[in-house]
Image (cartoon, rainbow, N blue to C red; front, side, top):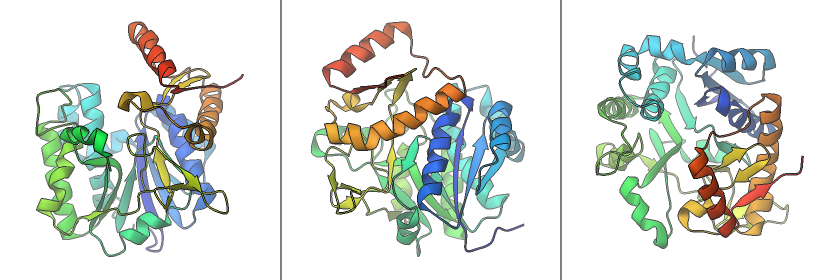
Amino acid sequence: MREPQNLRHLVTHCDYNYLPRAIVLIESIAKKSEDYVLILVCHDELSYSVMRKRSMQNVKLVKLSEIETHFEELSEKKYSIKPIEYIFLLSPFILKFCLESLKLEHIVYVDSDICFFSSIDPIFDETYNSQVGITSHNFPTNLKHLEENGKFNVGVLFFRNSKEAVQLLNWWADRCLESTSIELGSPDVFGDQKYLDLFVTILPSTHVFKNLGINAAPWNCHEITFDNNRGVNINGYDLVCFQFSGVKVSKNRFIVGYHRYGIRPKSKIKKHIYRPYVRQLYELNKDFNINGDSLRPSMKIRAWIRALIFGDYIFLLK
């Protein structure tokens, strides 16, 4: 059965360890938006059970096992590739499931480590007449070399349930079945991401989001300002959503992730973007008895030293 056409649909996915991040995402959308449904694909029974008990408004739960049953090719690949490669493989198939099985008119994919700071409206406003929408990394000049891993980011994507968009989505799914490797020396492949470089060639009408406040991230957000209502602005655009890529958690200690790009995060960015996010994440991790990311001991010390050098950390008082 089709959902009412006036609803906007979004989808994300996670396992139990990332569930706190997904809940922060869900709650951030609920604070600023109306007339939407967010589909949460739960990787395991525990995350599905927890979310059923929470019974969050405007959230539709789907088990990953349902998607794996629908696409037999996923089950065939699941144990023959690395876990991280399988996570990347899921992206196009989750979108395909939403359009094929749930028969939605459109779907917006958002990574679970994204948080919204304003309404979802700008995403749908920009794609009103589009079949497909993708977000550029918007690397500054000193980080342009990172485009070798992809000019575009999978963090926010839009697909309409149209012939052209579905054909492109099927092409992407087929490529991801071939490889989602992130090994060095694979110039044409980097996870599920590098394939997006060819979207505009295959479907010239593919829309590249112009609003720089959509899917802002450490690699493109170095300066922020405020409007008269104290809203956060990035390069003249209101901050719509921010991808907290690279955030590492160890109980009440957080590595922000800017040091990975050789950047020292400004105090305003830490105060107004990261601190509200990690406070929510900290409380949810406590509720779910999740201590944080399991960094290898040998890497943990090095990561913290580098984070300290770049001022790339947040300590929360218990």
